[in-house]
Amino acid sequence: MVSRVIPVDPFDLVVFGATGDLANRKILPGLYRRFFAGQIPEGARIIGAARTEMDTAAFRAHARAAIDEHVGAGKRDAAQIEAFLGILEYVPIDAMGEGGWTTLKALVRPQLINAFYFSVAPALFGPLAERLHAFGIAAAEARIVVEKPFGRDLASAKALNATLAEHFDETQIYRIDHYLGKETVQNLMAVRFANILFEPLWNAQFVDHVQITVAETVGVGGRGSYYDKSGAMRDMVQNHLMQLLCLIAMEPPYHFDPDAVRDEKLKVIRALQPVLAADIVRGQYLAHRSDDGKGHQPGYLEDAENPDSRTESYIALRVHVANWRWKGTPFYLRTGKRLRARTSEIAITFKEPPHSIFDEADETWRENVLVIRLQPNEGMNLKMMIKEPGPGGMRLVQVPLDMSFAEALGEDGADIPDAYERLIMDVIRGNQTLFMRGDEVEAAWAWTDPIIEGWTARGDRPQGYDAGSSGPEDALMLMHRDGRRWREIRE
Ligand code: BG6
Image (tube, rainbow, N blue to C red; front, side, top):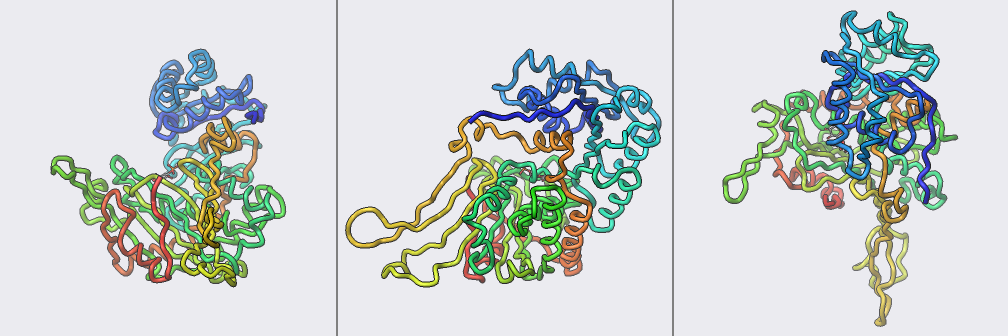
């Protein structure tokens, strides 16, 4: 299969916060990889802007270090890196003041596509938007890109939307949820809407339940005091897991078009029922001491630098989508830090056949499960019943129809671009399909707020769980009491 690179038109991309962590880990290495793939056209320019005083040469050295650290050796080509660094510029800028803005204006060419990436704290979104206008830098068609967290509740999200709306139209605003840039997440739409096989079964009549798992092995050390103000519900569920849920539960859009897709996702979010206290389990990972007693891995409270913290590093929820398609099918969501393995997947468990014609089926029968693996080893797996080979009667056995994208698609499948690469190129192309619309974000907070307010008012404490486990005991019960089981967390 030949890798296809769809060229984009020349652009000026300004990255505010260009010396920050996200720019280092994702944005600059991602742009380099697109350059290496031949997707960045002649004449394009990437302009770093940040508070740090430095010149373009120093910024290029900084970008080179980011590439060395975060780009695989196979793509680190000395000549290509040199050429890429040649399209970088740097402007020291004062986001809250006047410094640097006229220099920036002189660099940004209004006749090209202009995109401004706000890789900065949300408190700076307003001042940046204001100055881009005041200094006449943002052309009428200019695009702005904003990162999560987009607010910490409905009121703050509304305020952010209102601030941006003062200077930019909704069609110019690209709110990033990097999960939407993951290859397999988009594949969810292809699997559902480009195949006739699944759609007739994709409803409460045939689907017993859905499990969405995003498990991580990392803790929050290093960003603990930030994370402690957020927690897994705000950090992961309100955005990433919510988006996954939407793609699974939504109706077919009339076209693969930004507003058609986002309209359908919005309907799902609005159909989410309030979550009962009994359907929520929160946890915090505990400190871990190695068997010899020497090694100590801090627990959440230590990482968060807050011994009294009630913030969750793990959450499991049973969620209902109250509409005709899904009435009666629970969606179980869970995500957490310091779990057994880093794995993200969606599992759709189908109901049992209405009648069994096989005598032994009662003992051997297992449900059909469609598993969509988001990471690692992106792919799909459909568990099916077949006859166990050999003589001796009709014995049934469950086998996986397994497809790893890396194997099925050869080189292309093994070389899947990072979510950020794809999303930045979509900004340049002007395609908003994989970005969240303002009303979507607000609806997600409207559902989230009462859940958080509920446990705050009740004074609930998260349950401790062992580092390297599958999460708190109570999360198992959330499933067991419904006669179901979580899938094992493993790579
Ligand atoms: C971020 C969260 O949005 O997503 C992090 O703030 C989390 O806490 C990360 O670790 C997970 O992303 P990925 O792509 O590694 O699954």
